[in-house]
View 1 (spheres, helix red, strand yellow):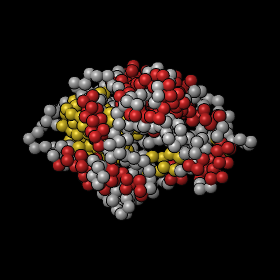
View 2: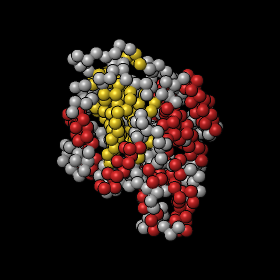
View 3: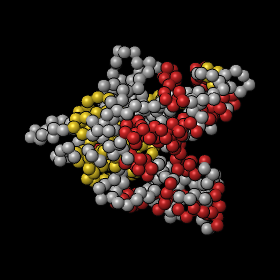
View 4: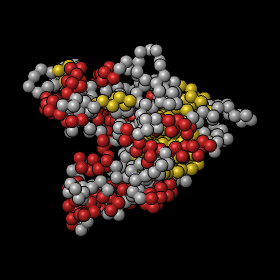
Length: 516
């Protein structure tokens, strides 16, 4: 596992990066995460699911707490405003909520609050290199979970290297090939045959990472980096402009890499020195190399492409009789009834080629312990067109248990807690005045959409390692919007301890695992 000096270096590098943005020493220290012991009994399996907020999608105008900078012109707890005195953060929140639905008022808010100081404050919080370091510290702070599934990761190669220093791996034992992003080769998964070829090739590569081909994260990175016109110009010179141009907008198309047979030549012509440094966002499964050994890797994409599931069979090195199937996924976004129905039809159920429920159920029915970790973009209370079908009900029914069963019924109904707090949430974000789309300012994503399902016949829940995030109300939650320096994403991570259920005639080796 990670040596103490490596853990210290991560924090030193993070603070140096934040200092380059002008972040105050107080803010840096307040966001420092203490390293926890990684030693625990071998009967436990610590698992972590975390949507890390893709680097290419971070500049989305999220409302963030003010004042992380050493030189902050507005004063503590306040934000600068054009043509007037600084405004309390709570007042800004109230103005945003009152302007919801009034596009003119939202434009006025953007004019009033979209100022250089606030953008610098936001950039310090959203900076990917600093967030990537904080993700590593977060893993250390949770006692180095045995299994880590990251969604919306668009820097897989670098993250895989960094986590290797912490004792993790993300590839099959016989995998010796260097990771090469799928866009370099020009893979596509838009039709059945192409998707099958991609999955077969990707499984053979042996890396437990499924990129969402033609992702918005990669497209945004190219456009924001100023490469769009350069790629179009390079395509002009090579007679391939029609393959990279969006016929509706005349700008760079999202699906251009598969139409040109691969991205490398055009990216180099556009001035990208190392095309493999760019990647699509996707889902990665990591595991502690001293705890588990990978036995098999399976990749499946969803109907129409752009997403899917990565499935890894792991053998517990503390007991050769124990194997575990880990499934990671990230379902499509949207909070409408139609969006939920799309997830059900195309991704979860097999109505239109969905496969997640079927794969999970097949592993479970075969007697395998299964853990499914995903950002579902769907809460227990979501519902499809019929008013009752939902991703929660389908996946809960397929495996039998969720880490959220203390708070929600299998039907998705909320269990009364009696403590005056809302059920847990894993998303607490708002688009603020820095958003490029004024009409979306004030949209508050306040929901539980990150899930871990498991088979209760072979695994039992031992507790949340990271206490669930709960608020008295959505209004109160607005005072703690994410991302932040401490939490490097717009999602909260989910970290729990599971344990093997006793099996007759099988004795678990009596030893502890780990040690940071």
